[in-house]
Length: 524
Image: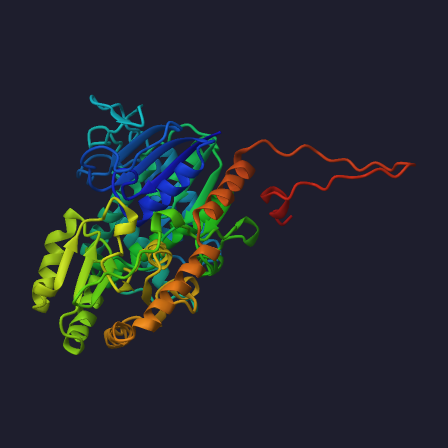
């Protein structure tokens, strides 16, 4: 069976929490053949960051560059699809989701597949296997199917219609100016470029979260009928990214509703949906996912990668936080709390692990504002996972709004005491094996850190409890077994029919195998 693993963000070319989860899945399911495809806004530098096995047939990256402005006659079919898309996006009628999905599907049909990567001149090699790594440059990738349409005018018309209908479930639409409409149209054109990305031919497309890869997965599913498995890997898409908070309320509304509508369309098209937690499961149910198609599969890490290490024998107390260091990584509330920790426990050191080169300047700027630069150490993501949390006595889990819970599980498996912020699935993941504090409360975060730094015995007890909980619920073997069953169930041949015969002489009967196919049935 051939699987196209479609992601957004860089795997296998970038090491991050999502990449670690994908690596676990691909390495553990070596009985399948994988084609790895990632869609990014930034071209990867260099070859794969992870060693890829012989069962990985190809690894590709497609870079979506900004669409060039073009003047000319509007495409009537694309304009009609844009009207459906925007009416469904902003309407209050009962069939808004159907209108949005119909418009999106028409745009996918119009989009000319041009984001399929081509072989680079110097193929990468991993585990002795040639791998193709290339990027869809603006010249290679097809333009957005919305290019050439009067999208700003279509948005304005749909906005007026949406404001004219009072809906009890949605807040009133803010005022949309002509400038706002043009800005929103530019963002929508850029987003819909992903509809032109062509996934590799496969028996199944496994889309790992995010609006951009889901758009490409939906387009491929509609064109070829390839079964689609959707993993909810990030926080709900209704949250805006930090950089988007500077946009006007109307443009933010367009982005929020667009991402939510794409997710709802994905729930309707996916053959199976695998949320990472009950938190993601509940959110998907509220947004139209069918219960019969959902199989929660919590994230997991390899216990051997995070063998417990004794606390470092350091003269100064040490805290560890793992994150990219970017604007949406949770760095700001972390630094706000650290200032209070240093004031109460002088000499405390904060280790920031996993800061990416792209975010080093932003991270350094935020640190300079605190005046605590001497007490903060920046580290790249260690190649050996055992070194990730070894430098600290306490691990802080302060995630960004879109961060999955992988880092929290890693910290728990490392046997370190964890202080987590109550965001997303943190509460159900950590349970009573750590300290949970409210979100947006740096004072509570600082108090919890101070308490653990001053209580070595409680710290070690919580670290042991976290390790036991991670071993019981969040291991890679569970993830691999579950996804192996989901792949087989969704794309494998149907099970043989079973007939029950009335025999005169009783005979022993073998029970039907308990597979996902028998456990999950569509409502008729």
